Image (cartoon, rainbow, N blue to C red; front, side, top):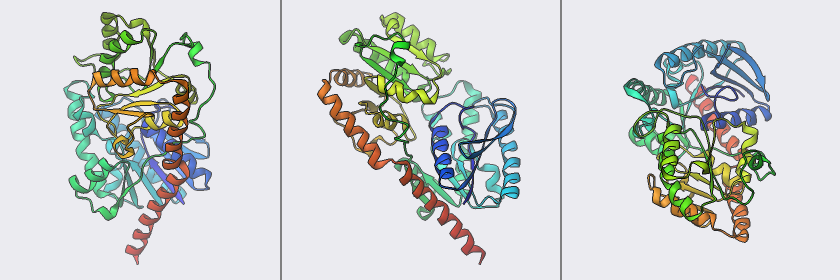
Length: 404
């Protein structure tokens, strides 16, 4: 099968966010099975074509700015021309595009192949949680949200990565349920597993200090400002605790401006600045090591489309404190290995964190095995790829039958 993905975010030039991670995992897994896979994504510098792990990667566009209407138009125009070119040259059979950013909008106006839209994150999610800076970004996101919905309605098939997205597609967008498939993302458990690492030593964190890890952009949607409110209570109860925050800064602090500066100001005012470590960027290959060396992963999001960080941490055998967003309600896990709190509940985050950090070694070892087994049994890459191929085959079958 010959497949083309439209995803502005694709590593390593873009950040390893959920969309980039998911498409990289899927593209490489399909290529490994012998399928021809092309990815059209944003160029961070000079546009170029390359081959990465058997995947043909086409980087296009000249403006990588995030949340910019002009940058989005620039990328989308170049992406459409590139897509038409590779359809003609390579005989692409299926085009899949991410819902986020209305990647499929232009192509959906005049499709040459069956189109699959993967509903992951949406502009409306950013709007709901205030994850933007300024009126211009807000207006851009509102327009983007309408274009995303239009693209999904035009698709031959829609892949919903969570029950929330499935319900949105069928109930809000009124897409026939026969065209919508609920297919969860997967985690590469060969990559995400417990590994020995010297990251703690490199960060200057004592081996006996409790280490709490947050992974995600420093933005309001990720709830990092809520987590910041919990830090003081945690440090009061467990003074030696260190907090490592991995992710790029954004201008979405509660009163506007840099979220990183906001957290630093709060930390200084409440006496826990020395307990914080910021990592703006971490190579993807080092992330399993950081998961492995921490004692707890906290995901305080106000909204998540899925929540890959939670599953990655569990695959590495780590206990997790997480809010009831994204995939979490579907997992129905709320016990010793995973504690679920309501979004925005700083006191709940603090209480759950202290409880998890107080686990003895015996409980930690048992939880490590149980959490990894959840991911292994329910979110494996081979099973995920089988389902995705099934979606593509169904779309192709419908197209062929309509042409008879």
